[in-house]
Image 1: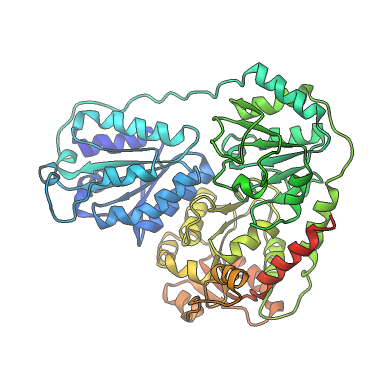
Image 2 (image 1 turned 90 degrees about the vertical axis):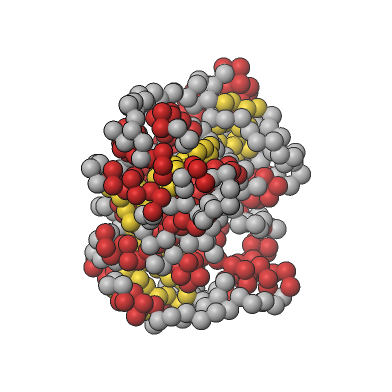
Amino acid sequence: MKAAELFVKCLENEGVEYIFGVPGEENLDVMDALLDSSIIFITTRHEQGAAFMADVYGRLTGRPGVCLATLGPGATNLMTGVADANMDHAPLVAIAGQADTERLHKESHQVLKLDEMFQHITKYSTIILTENVINEVVRKAFKLAMSEKQGATFIEFPENIAKLDVDTKPLPIKYVKQPEPPQDRIEAAIELISNAKLPIILAGNGVIRANASDQLLEFAEKLNIPVANTFMAKGVMPFRHPLALGSVGLQSNDYANVGFSKADVVICIGYDLVEYHPKLWNPTGNNCLIHLDTVSAEVDAYYSINVGAIGDIRLSLARISEKATPHVGDMMRPLRDALISEMKAHSKDTVFPIKPQKIIWDLRTVLESSDIVITDVGAHKMWMARMYRCDEPNTCIISNGFASMGIAVPGAIAAKLVNPDKTIVAVTGDAGFLMNSQEIETAVRLSTPIVILIWNDCGYGLIEWKQMNRFGRPSNVAFNNPDFVQYAESFGAKGFRVEKTEELLPTLKKAIESNCVCIIDCPVDYSENLKLTEHLGEMVCPI
């Protein structure tokens, strides 16, 4: 068989369902081999959109999403989405075609040293220089993408190698179980927790990757310890649970951070420093820290751990909760009550443009617990992370390590492919929406009904928020937008414009019930941003 055919068979062997990408001249042989494959190729309108689709696919399934591009500009267009997946620890395998190896040593049309470029944003980056190593390269790329901490890998496939004949086959897949945590470390953690007066749990995205949400809930309940989660771990502890303190991550001294300042032991479970820097919740660096994870703690001056138990998170939680002394009392309850009051405060608002709190209240009202929102990056992300209530993991996907704008629309398409029976909503600002809005055509072509909720403020709202906080005046953040309703209709999607606050909830219901690609233009009042900053500053002092 041809090397390109072996390459595709190796992808099939890895269980690949979809490849998201843009065809090109240097991957012609791979594209042709895919015609006889069980793998479905999703033709996207931009390589960045393809990478974001693979990124979200990896987050939701726990298996590597795969994206493909041609050489040169096609490959560089992948880089933002690949970096996003790698920094947020989503499993992803990126593939790029490359020119004939006979012209890689010199200046040549569209040729870049792609494997060297991708080394800086992946766990593994390589070029296939001989057809006999294809099976090894593909197996290694998938193995490393799946290994904790999960992330992105990259394969560069020159066009002349793809055409060669080869006589080999895919390698067998062997899954390695997470090791058991050392018993002496478990016992040390048990002692610290049992003797603590006011412990608190910080749950990170690693809990979701380890499928340890149920064990976390049991651990918290059994020991009566409240749980705060990072942005990327929303839903890992059901918000409806009385021990849930909600999300930390706003760079302000909000309610949950007051809990950290009072806690004498912080139990960090599956916590990645990239999610929320410890300097923001452990500013003195003196907190007593327990680190429960699959890998050793990152070295950081503000994350000096007292006890670390490395291994299967589920086993660590079960063994500690079995012997640790449960705590009594509910000293963190005022923090939770304050947050719930804030969430409800604007539920009956009629002011227009609509306040962020009201948009989130109506969105949460119309969606089921298992439905999924993909949140883009901007001011709306901060509000969603803080105010959107989740009762199940991976129902609010937030890019927070690399925090790249443009993920919501392509990410929602991938989410719908993975979960065809769930309602999928892309929550995005007007700026982030237009960065990858071309993928609306992809959604319409694939008949993947998604709802795109645009928070429209005609500007870069998050940057203005920060500018106003620091300098008291905005700088070059305003812009104009197209007519989003007409824009939607030009793609064959449905467009809605919210013109008064009372219209939002019925418009959301109508869009969901239409079972097609819908775009909702929703004006937002971001004057609430500064009010939130002031509010948090006032509220934390007396608590």
